[in-house]
Image 1 (cartoon, rainbow, N blue to C red):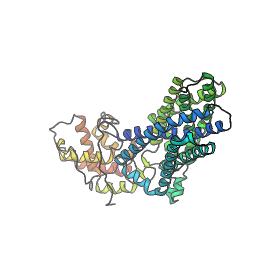
Image 2: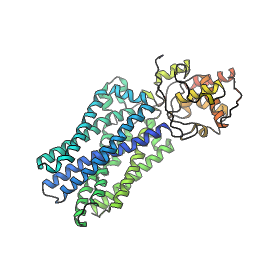
Image 3: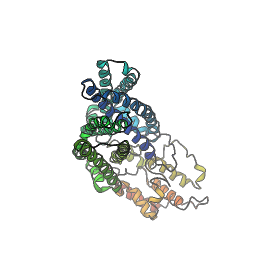
Image 4: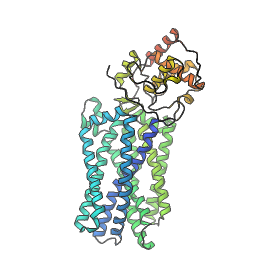
Length: 465
């Protein structure tokens, strides 16, 4: 336990760290799913062209692939690098644990991605010069590799919420093929196909051909939106396999989470209804402006869905293994005895602004235990969240953190840490004055905080799945 790792922490100002990585991650996931669905869509259109079932399919494939590579490969690669860059600053221990546990499976995913990129650039370079067999094989290679990159990464990401038998010593494969693996994989595949169909409708409207020929291509592309009809069932399947407490937060226990569930479900319903009823059943023509609007709506649904997926793991980054503040359950119990910052080797960057050692102590506690999900004054700011609480309310709520807010981890510190954090919040609430009367910890107060800490315990109340 003496080797509990502390990582250098970057300050993103008023932006919560989760918002930084979340913003990058949402864009990356959207582009990745577009690339996966696009590969399957292009393979389908190439077969139509070679079978003589759609005379303009070949022109569409060549035009669409140029856009797919430009947007998905270039911007997707940039956001992918940005994901790693921000992750190692925000959650270095989490990403390190994932790499440790799934090293070779992640390497396999990278191989699939490398094949996808190589096949994609090869098709852009020489696709027009290949015969039919060469074109279909190269597109099949691209589509297969892109879907398998989803297959491998899906198992690793879904493991974070539903480790399943992995927690009982089931090993890597038990963690990979976890309870939410299949509903998540099929759901993401359906989303990828729908995104590809919507993007195709945008591209088709840019082709230099008459309306009837474009309408024929749109009718073909709209068939890729049909799997959206399964999304309600897939969502119910997913809800059924996630932990009970996570499910309760999504379905009313946390209004923020429930709101984003509603946004994701509502946007998906609107897109699916238009695509299936309007495009497939009624065979309506969709303009480029409408298709772009639906694609933007799909981005909103993706953003809300990713927020829900991340939030459902609270208070963990890996359920049952690692809390959101990068501590294990065993380390929480250890730090209750030693204090949260006893072995923290890093000084505060702005230590001189704090007028007392107790406030310095409180700032270190906040950095170690709170700032993965909170700021002091910005997004999810602690000052505003606790502004109306009295000092005793602060002490009790922090000491009994996992009971006060069930989606937060137990407080990983002792009574002195709690009191230092309380005094820091009081000081910040008063505007951070340069002169501050040092608040010597009162023994009776510390004893009461210690009793509250003991009553709360160091474990998280949860239902394991």
